[in-house]
Image (cartoon, rainbow, N blue to C red):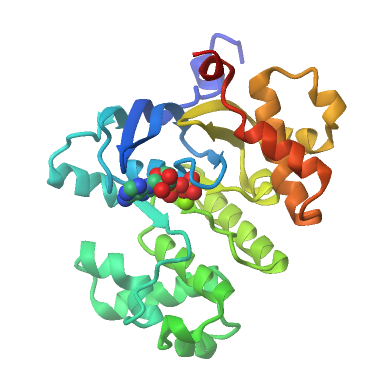
Length: 305
Ligand SMILES: Nc1ncnc2c1ncn2[C@@H]1O[C@H](COP(=O)(O)OP(=O)(O)O)[C@@H](O)[C@H]1O
Ligand SMILES: [Mg+2]
């Protein structure tokens, strides 16, 4: 085939989510100060950033839970900001969010939690919803047999371990076969083997449908490197840099001496990546004190102002 044959040309990456100049103040403080971000169909983009830097706030804007003071959020070219409720609900149906800590409904059974969006947004009869619930529980590897899963489906969230609750939260996101899945700190608070099992589920969700686009917010560097195609670093209310996920491993290997030759922004990123890896290894080394200083140093332009 000739290079000019359009059928042989690789499909151009399709930007499905475009965020432009997003600003939002909360509690009198500017949290988002001009976020720009593009997400391509089918990819998993991981947003990393320090605690309290606005990662959850950004996800809530994408879900339409919060409104920006200014800026734009487009899904497939359709503006979400100021979209009437009906239009917003239509877009929202295509999104699923796995909230920080799972955020299951405590007074509902596992089956009711997982089947919730199907019951709300479709006219599917309950026995079909239940079949889908059991299928989703199997996909997230809850229970070994149908009988196990039927038993788990009837349980209350409070009766489950943290890892099982996270699996239920992912099953709930999966139930309506969303095109976009947003995860807020999916591995936080889990022991390393359970966290890694959740990473595998995030990969499975992405691979199940190659048109599915995922956004993962985390400060777990192992998770970011494993599940991400690309990483975006949120710092001081803006996306400071974007890079392919394997670069996380490269930053982890860079020493402080090597980082001395980095640009200020790259040093911030290095300090963040290292700080979060080192914190797991060593609680309060000289190194992490240096990192902390770097992370909390004001931006050069602000220091001059
Ligand atoms: N509803 C709110 N009212 C006031 N301040 C808020 C609200 N939600 C978030 N914030 C503040 O916005 C900042 C970013 O929060 P968040 O996005 O939750 O951080 P994280 O990056 O840890 O997810 C924090 O300083 C937080 O205190
Ligand atoms: Mg958060």
